[in-house]
Image (cartoon, rainbow, N blue to C red):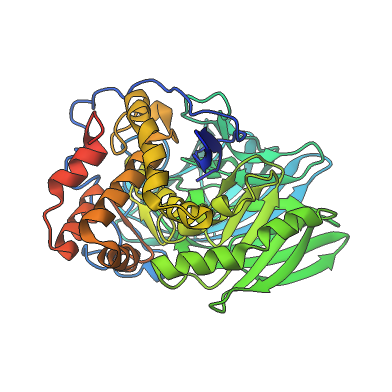
Length: 497
């Protein structure tokens, strides 16, 4: 998730929130969490959240490698995403014109209809104008009101279709559901010189392409990016080709591991590419603004950070890893291509460790919906805390004790980690409480058993989604201890255990 900093006593530690702050900022003060609405899905430790997900043990199709998912309606943000669409593969052909701040796109989307219906619906922000839509090669009637792009067509359950959408416009960010002074929008961001970057939690991918913008719908991606030289386009996955054509830099990228839309990134700038290799053999690339060797020196600690995380969470789950540094104050773990701001803190080892840990917790296994964002942030924050303790030569308990001083106030302000106020997305309560919970469990199980299970969990749901019920049940089954009350107290309790 997007990174920020929080000053606590003698320690500057990462709040790593969906927003951007400086090291001197304190946590925001969002409104308290309301009572759950009548009839809303339960987050109790005995009720599965929002239905099934893709994964090896939940009866899903088993075709995650082909982009198959079981989309759901988000409990916190039901107006974004549509469970009637299972996006399988996005092919995005994008041209960015910095001088006019204009994006031109031709999108080819392979999808599966998940139900009988008279339409298909995607999210696409209104500043982008749709020129035409083809459904399975034929022109299709469509309407585009607000952020909803509706393609009128009779579809049947499990039918496969191909949509080709041609569009253009001047994209801009959209408001975010936060109660923070440092961050109020998400999505496509343009800098003063026409460079761009995207960070989009809990949504915002729809500011630049038509998408089922909800985390349960994972898909595969190909990108063709064009921009006037010397700018170059950067995206997720492996760089397949880089060339020049008619004064434009053209790059082609492929992400062949299924990803949720919030984990997709595109950036255009005058980047310098530097290649490296991790100790484990994973190819690394660093994309830094030209003329900024200071930024390159900071991100060159990536092999060290990746090696340390692999020692704790097991082999890196993807084939490549990249770092792209943009004109921002924060960072985000976008899948296989981590997006970092160009501040000293956002490119620090603490942030690198946190965002790399997300490749396992958040990217390899993603929450079914945003109610369970604590699954991502709790473990990444805990891993960061362990790294901080080791790097400073102090016991892990010293870091956790400092965080424990903050946690009751954060829980009171924004609600329990697994039942937070939806208007306070990305608040510190989903970071520190779950991090303390994992440390409590580490002490209960012992270091060896805890880290064995922490590394095994992402492999159990590799390339899939999970929820409160799945992760808490899995840890109970594999630890041999009934952890039902333990998880409920930490994640759903109004007061800190």
